[in-house]
Image 1 (cartoon, rainbow, N blue to C red):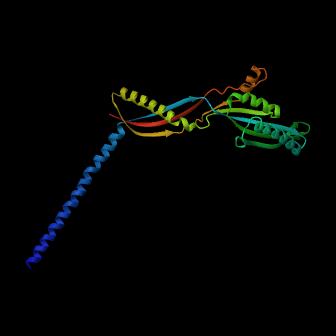
Image 2 (spheres, rainbow, N blue to C red; image 1 turned 90 degrees about the horizontal axis):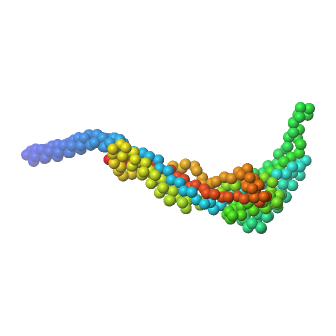
Image 3 (cartoon, helix red, strand yellow; image 1 turned 120 degrees about the vertical axis):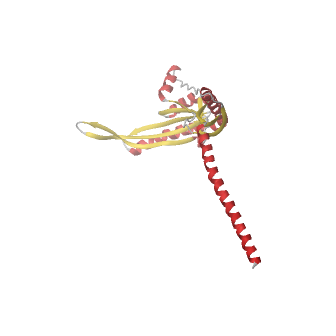
Length: 255
């Protein structure tokens, strides 16, 4: 009987100790919860968020040209046939004379549509058909763009659209433009901290924003026509510079 009582007392002591441990853990978690919440609130209050902008002006290395032809005829078949001959001649010249690869010549528009006329007497009438075919041509020798457009026009292209100058691989400049954006964010955040009589701490988060600015410069028909007039018939196209940009949303700690 004595051994049973001792065993009972021992078991009770173990259970009591266990209860104290569990209770202690429960109390500990109760006290630590508010500390964590309070710390999170402090971090939220002691930050500054800015947007840093980075921009590089770079000489383009490729141009995308819109070169096409239109043809009119009494029937849709005749219009399409006439236009196909023009485009074939232009394409052949681009490949043989100018050394442009197949992958750099792409059809972007093709259509054959009725040409409508209207009069009060007869109403709307179909007066022949118009065939259209437009190519997008990628070209990398930017010193000869004007000469290429003149040659395409002489070969039968009568619908020459915009010249889009660009950087073929803008990712090569990504690190530089990001560094500029981060430096801009540092300047802004430091100015805000100084105005608030605080000091700037470490960076908390950085998010890159896609601002949707493609590094492309457009030269429309009117600009190219003026350039041609200024050079007595020879088209002169100046590539200028294109811009590569990015934006960073940066959150800093305030001390």
